[in-house]
Image (cartoon, helix red, strand yellow):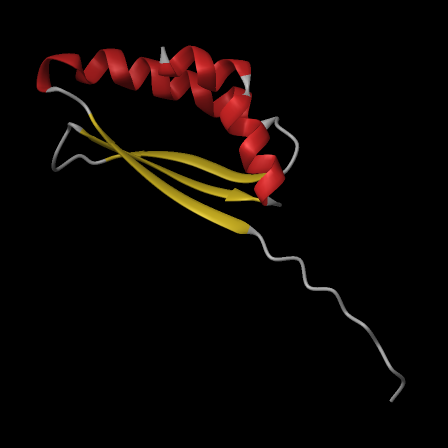
Length: 86
């Protein structure tokens, strides 16, 4: 066998949980749902899913997979994320 240098590209996984105030569930859900389509088009986004816990309607969880830490950092600085945070 020849010498093969194989670079393994490690993806970055993120699980982010948010909890809505009981009187703000629908308002938060609207904001979070709007993030999904914009984020899925970002460079390096391999997976971006929003889960809504039906047993506890105040709980939302994002499950994310990014090609690199730089891609995640760019996502966190994106206009749609910054708008949602304000």
